[in-house]
Image (tube, rainbow, N blue to C red; front, side, top):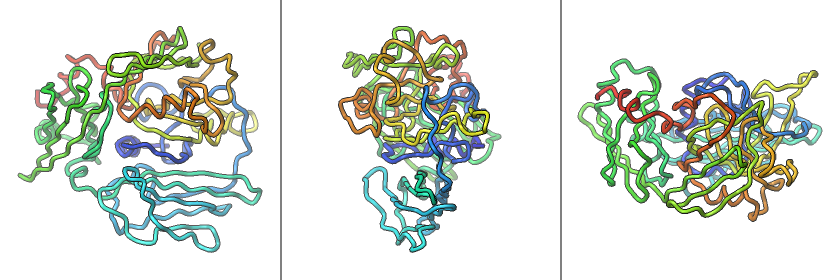
Length: 413
């Protein structure tokens, strides 16, 4: 089970496009690949990630990456290792997300472990991607994103987004703490967030361990946001830029998604959203992670057949972008017939776009949307049959809280 702290670490770690394949299972350390009720960190319930897909033969190989998914404040000399049981590693890469630079490493002769050849860099987000096969030749994959020690980002709590990053207009400032905060007013008073646009920015405690900041309306495109953190008279400053505005609206009734760039519609895409039994959340969601391929397994949401095997196990769902911590994704769908998109809502809660296996066709709608989206972009769903109010702390769904209520949640107001 994923703890709330691990989920927050995972959320704030993902500030760039992760181009490998991520295994999403209940024990994988990466969060659930299906929506699990409304509040972040709840056990999985109804919103499964995929439609009707055949179960694949699951590999016996089990890959372990140390430290695990979402780790931050990792020392540059701390051991980073990859190990496998019941199989052999076939490929391991460790890549700096921001630059794409790969860390050289050694895969040991017996094929059961890997480690980098030297120290890693400070204040860097790395993705470790590992592949293995078992005795029957069945493949297994595992990914982990880790963040090395960054004094600015871990000054009083782990801060997202990262210093120097560029994000979409919906990206809130999130500070995640290692423990519950008692004197919230004292802590909040040491954090000042401002925008070059002049927008008023207010903090809101979404929990005892999570403090978010946002303006009343989305950030102004092209603006610069500055975060100043003070502790014992010492100040650290983090800045990030807001890119172009992109707001995509999914209409579950018409089964179309309209993509608006800087207020102008640039494309309308046929989609398939959640079925009547498992409708997609209505509301404003924000892209928090991007994966060119992602492993989705029904065991993460408790969907199993009578023999105990997962109802589905899809190794590589292409062009997947996370919209909620409870597992809502917008992703490519290559198993649905062409007649589904724009006509029938068939998923268990995610939003599916037409794609091909492997995601290698850049002309497909899912590939286009993935390539034209960034972390922090907004995806709004309307006209779904779902009657549940989307919780603001479920991912980066802060914008679903009315401004008056948001301001009331500040400890310094």
